[in-house]
Amino acid sequence: MRLGLFDSGVGGFTVLKKVIELCPNNSFIYLADTARLPYGVKTTHEIMKIAEEISSWFSYQNIDAFLVACNTTNAIALDVIKKNLDVPVFDLIGSAASTIQESRVGVLATPSTVKTKAYTNAIMEVKPKTFVIEQPCPELVPMIEMDNINSDEIIDVAGIYLQPLLKQKINSLILGCSHYPLISPFLTELLPSSVKLIDPADALSLKLKLFIDSEERKYSKKKNLVDLKFYVTSNLKNFPNKAKHWLNVFPEVNLVSLQKKGWVS
Ligand code: DGL
Image (cartoon, rainbow, N blue to C red; front, side):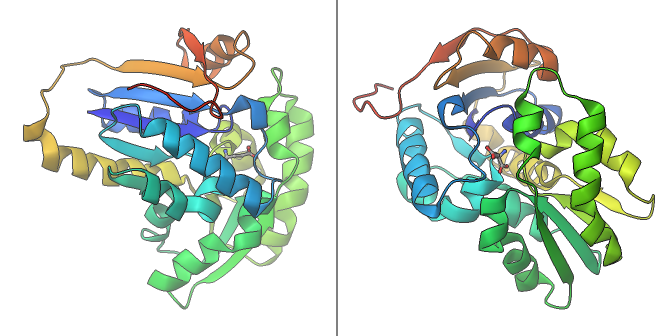
């Protein structure tokens, strides 16, 4: 199956990794909109435009399913994406919300995601008695995207963001931005062992696996083959090193302009 996914930068790698673990024999097209990173402090209007352009581009890529590997776009513009694509769309927020078991849930996310209260609303729909507290973390994505993560700085900043959530005695913490699982070792250090860390990519991958298994007969199975194609909107030279660092692959990366129409499939 040919799967499309995107993020502003390397955050979607955490989704790609989990999906490959569970659904390995597929082709993946990963788009990093590096020209507009970070998304998490952008307005609703800007994110809607981004979602429109990205989903239009993917509509020319012959994909069989689409994964929204960015929470910010998921929170603000899922409808835009669904409208532009005529393939099944798998999202992080809805997938994670449907699996929540704990009574007191903390969410770390970008400011734009937190503003929408998308996690709170999605959890309330399935478990209305849950206590949910969301914390915006404007500094984390820029720090993670820097080539050398300064662990002391990350721990200091994350510690400040976690304080209000720990005060509320959360018993689970949703990593509500796909960049954050990249720093989960630091977050684990800061959390009591009673707090369960939730990566929404787990729930998304499970849903996707069920779908792929149910569709299996339609698609020829390529055994043990992961085919990866990477596209960026800027910083072409830097990206292979980032992929090497986080995914242990050194791919060929292509530059794409999302504003220029007339793509061919
Ligand atoms: N990784 C994305 C998210 O899950 C975007 C983060 C950003 O670019 O600020 O929200």
